[in-house]
Image (cartoon, rainbow, N blue to C red; front, side):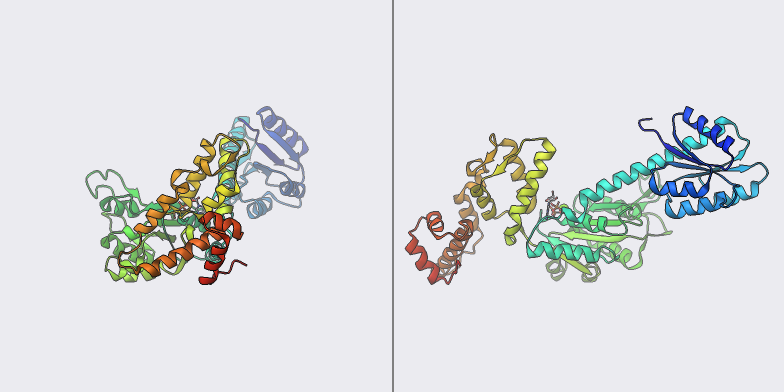
Length: 459
Ligand SMILES: Nc1ncnc2c1ncn2[C@@H]1O[C@H](COP(=O)(O)OP(=O)(O)OP(=O)(O)O)[C@@H](O)[C@H]1O
Ligand SMILES: [Mg+2]
């Protein structure tokens, strides 16, 4: 036993109390012994107690009342009741009202020790579960969503408002924009947070397996189904089911999913008994579902079922003001995880990160920050330490040109590009004109002429 369990005993008979205390202390427990129930209840409010052992018959407050009050205020503390021989009936009653165990006096030492041991184990398991739960909340809570853009602030408000209800939430956004992060934040902010968060990636599994993965199967329903298996829907009962990459769902499964969302019940594969579940569905997709609906690839009725609350996550390049706080967040995280000494990006390197297009969004940013920190030799990470594709303006230029349709009006397009580049350079130069001109390789007067021409106001 790494840490001693703390046992609280209440009995109005002082001699008995002393015997019990000695017995339990000898067995390695930390013991607090009191002879008055009110003192015991007050003590529970102040200290961490693992198990309560109480006598049944005491003047003023009975063991049954102690039990009721403990169940109400500290439901996770197992209560062991000691009853006098002959009062079997009340013992049964006491078990019904939630006692962990009861022992009739006089009892053997072994009998008492076994019962206390079992109660202490249960308490320990509870405590570990709660610690794990707190760690999960800490890890996936709403405060893990970083950003100062309007978009992120809107997301935080929506998560907060949607969390308490059971409404289905649809999270949309390109790959790496934080859809799973938001889905977990919803779960861990919701009243369902103590129940499971079950994630299913609709793309990673092949359609045949997906059905039994979602709904489970009965024994013998297909070759290889040697035992009954509960699916993800059942595993998520009371909690949240996260359907990731929803756009990949086959038409057949779309129908089945629609039915579960409508009726909150389904049958296991090969079964005919309906299974009822209480789940909250959060779905995510990087596809434009409306577009899939128009093409007939996604059921319209299912789309509207899912699209009750929609949380759109814009790509990182449309909320560049989040880049700097995200970089700071990832730097701190990577340094802490790897026990590394302080390191930071130079303002110029940060400018490059801010200006980059980030096709892989936040996941890509996270990876770049990590690799720079791990590979960079010094305490400062400069432009030269950045990966070539972020540093390489030529590559950025090519990939941008690749995205343009060929039948554009040349003069008009060039002007648009020029104006866009000037704006970007301005932002990167923090609106300092001399620096902007330097970035663009033009004179300050030419820059000023162009600023006027395109109506760009840089304060
Ligand atoms: N606003 C944010 N603040 C902090 N970290 C974020 C934020 N958004 C995303 N991340 C981090 O970026 C990574 C990618 O996020 P996530 O896996 O949630 O994206 P996704 O949209 O589900 O991507 P995909 O479509 O590829 O599955 C994760 O490590 C996540 O913690
Ligand atoms: Mg994801």
